[in-house]
Every structure is written in C-alpha cells, then in structure tokens.
Image (tube, rainbow over all chains, first blue to last red; front, top):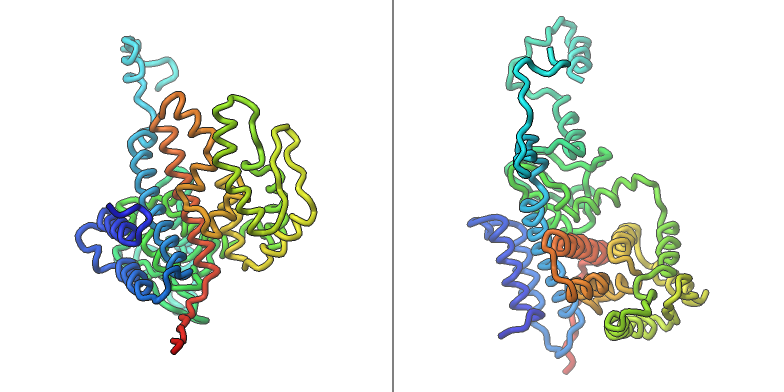
Length: 110
Length: 291
C-alpha cells in the first residue's frame, strides 16, 4: 500500500477533494488541469533525489491538507456551531417547564 | 448612492429624470461599487453567491486577476485583486468556485491572505514584521518545557528536541529551551542570523510567514514547515502537543478538539502555500545532459 507521502496518493487525494467540492464537472476546472500538469511535469527526472520533486510533493501535500481541512472544518462547523440559539419555548421544554401564558398580553405590549 | 448618480445623469443629459423612470433591469453604474462594498458582508449578514463562473485573467504587469462572471474581484479596501503568479490565482479562484449558495469567507484563507497583503490595513512594513517575528522567538512554544507530568515532559523531549536540533544545525544558531517562566535567553547572534534570513523574503511572503507563526505559536515550527522539513500535519501536531497529550489521556471531544485542529491545519496550510507561491519564480530550469 502506497504511503501517504507518495505522489500518487497526494494526486488522488487532491482530485477526490475537487470532485467532492465541484461535483461531476470537476474535470473542466482550471485547478484540475493545473494540478495534473504539475504532477506530469515533475515525473520525468534522471536524479534519484530531486529537490524540485520533493518540493513539488510537499506543495501537493500542503494543498491536499488545505482542501481536506477546510472541508472537515466546515462540516464540523455546520454540524455543531451553526444552529444558533434554541427558541425560548424549546429551552423551557428541555427541563420540563412551560412558559406562562398571559391571555391579556404582557403589560408593555400594545 | 442612487440619487447621486441620478443627479449626475441629470447634469449630463440636461433633462429631468425621475427616479422611477429607470426601467427595472437597467444596469446602473452605482450598482457595481455598491455590490463591491457589500461583497465581503458585515459580521452578521451572509452574502449570497452572486456569480456562476470564476475565471482568471492576466492583466497589466503580468499580474493575474480573478473574475466572478464578468466582474473583476476587488479587495475589501477597493483595490483591484491581483496576484503575482498563476498558481496562486488558480488556488484563489478555486476557493471562490467552491462556495455554494452563501459565501463563507472563513473558509477562504488564501483570499484573506491576499487581501491582507494587498490592502495592508495596519500599514505594516517588512521591518516591523521581521522584528515582531524575532520577538516571538522569546516566547516560542518549542522553547517552553514543563516539569511535570512526566509523560508530557518525555513527549516534549522526544518530539520537540529533534526539531530544535534541526533548526540549530540548519541555521548554525543556538536557541535552547527553558522550563521556568522567564523563557530562554536568545543570543544576539541568533537573532542576527534569523534577521538576515528573513530579509530575503518579500513583503507577501513575510505576510504569509507572520500568519503561520501566529497560527502555530512558534517561529521554530514555522521555519520547519516553510523549509519543508515538516509537513503541515506534523507541524500542527507539534504545535498542539500538550493538547494531544491531554486528548490521549482524557479523550477527544470532536466539536472542540477536531474543530480546532482542522481550523489550525487549514490556516497553516494556506499560510505555507501562500509563502511558497509568493516567493517562487516560475522559471523552468533545463538540465544540461553530460555526455
């Protein structure tokens, strides 16, 4: 199984994130073409340890981390922090109480 | 706003134009500036996604611009939004493209960084940023060691010492760590070495680096990340070492721990990308084949 640091894993990860973000036409986006071009460009090298290749891999992993983290952060935000306050009746209902009803309306309401 | 433009039209064409005589669909010049001011919204109202397509274009001086449908993106300060290279432009365009229904600016970290670099709302110079970064070294997370509990002491030693060794070797400096409240004494030569190194950054890269340092709460870790010695995930774990230790002991609370971790990762990754893209030149190096 390829390590998470391999270029293949990084490329696949980025493309998966793009597909999640954009839907079915992610292949037409600028970023898709750019990412593939970057990966292709760094493939051919005669060196065993190529500085440019390591730099490109680090950049790819950083971008993958950016895409994944923003998505996960947004997901957790929507799930836990986006609802706002409960209504007053609901809050009272949480502990089994009901709000008092005043058929004549409250004193300060016209 | 509307009234002022109507008066302008009045003067131009010399006829009386009633406000209601403008047909509904007409493009009024004031509309674009009005939209642009409201583009970034206030703290409480949300902006709806008002565009379909995002594209980039190369303008004057080789700088790249972002287009939302037909409109050019501007910064909150009103300047034209420009970035120095195509890769950064594409990344920013992707952030805008990924928005659905409402615009969530707190997910658009690269855009925010570009806006800060372009507008520079607090008018900071590169020298101010460099001296602030060097000052930060005195309160660097890596330098502050606890004395108990022993598990955390050992964890700090095992995880932070290698990074400290790396940076001291790489830059030929002495930093050291301390476990008292005063913190380490940073020698002047160390500061000078780092200052020289930081001088080589341009304004944009320095903005990004300052952002990363603020997020990770450590200059050492930021250098480790920017010099590509650490990955973003590793830097974040090292920055949150004590939290990770407590999570191991007491358990993980998703809506606090994971939430904070993902936010820190996203911001740090954006900062690192911003630094790298702002300092790269897209020159293609061709190797000469030796026979």
